Image 1 (tube, helix red, strand yellow):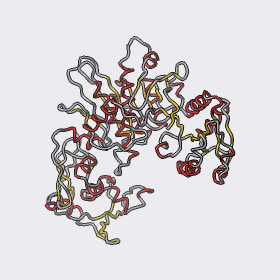
Image 2 (cartoon, one colour):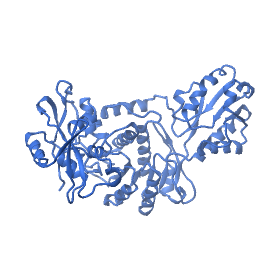
Image 3 (cartoon, helix red, strand yellow):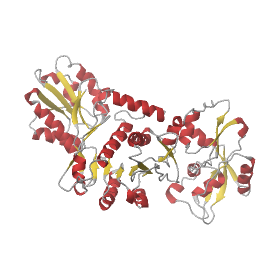
Length: 528
């Protein structure tokens, strides 16, 4: 039976804590009162932090040696003294089922750091019925009670992506059910057939106190996936969705794969990092479970894993696609390679240069000094499209060139090779190779999706180029179409029979070599 740590701000709690500290000497360092506590046999940092009602991070802040030497028997720790708080002056929140610290902070419009400061003994279990101090009554506006459950969904989603379905709403909500947010599935009722089971292995980083857009984008990916499942789920077709926090740990992946439910899966989406993909690939081969790799293009030994589907194309394929596009334009284009060195800024640009040469696309070498001293017109052609390829990975370098290039826009056809995420801020036309299509088009399918998403997840997306929620939706929709294909077809025929047109990506997977894995070949050269 799980141990539940109930958070109570009461006289009883304060007296209990004080009794544990009666024999602890107190020092004052820079105005902060600190207990001097000697570590006893069998104690860990987690247990000490709970006994004193402070976070592990607070203890480490005053005991830097813990970062390098760890905790030792007999070690003397300096532990911040927790001040008593008059809870009658504060808004007090009772934790409801499936709520998280992130969601509560959004509900009251306060910072997570404020909740952690007022509630230093808070545990990541977020026990139902626990009480949290939100802030002084005069400073916090009590939110209106929502009329429907979906308005609360975002609060549950961000930090804790395990799923559970409410009976009164079709969309999956999220909760922490284990210390590491292992998993809870989307239950099915009145099953007429065996459900489709899909697991999402994503770095939700539930143990991270500071949320960032880089972390939350994986939550948004998962939100899009849940909306895709919701559209497909019916009495005839049921789904069980598992979500796991993979963190950035290979060991964590191995622990997840050892769970018994993993052997009953129909498909896996994830993980995010190349080393984790290698571990999952070996598992998928042994169990014959298809895996869509959503993020990394660096999948080792893809040709050896027939159940892997790599969404992001390799740098080689992107370079080949760009060079083929320019080759098809014939003599109407010339490329200008802008570089001050013989070395390449990245393997990606080296491949671009190689493919342009192999496809016999005209390319002239110039230096950044030529742009600086206004000598560029001597290298531009008035009867061709001039495409500048700058040997840099730094967006700041590209932006710095814009004022110089804008001067010649009226007299020459001038553009640059860019990246998908850069095009928004460039003042000259740009080429880019991408698996993401129509970035600025708003059509009926996107409007319908956005309306539904706003209803269930009441927050703005943190990603735009690309949108990770759209990516989660598209990949899940594609995967469900493959799993629903004619079972009499071979695995290869089922994959190659599906040509999916999505919100943000068109998906078509082709086998890299006979008996090997699959790569998304639906990429295109776009302009803006």
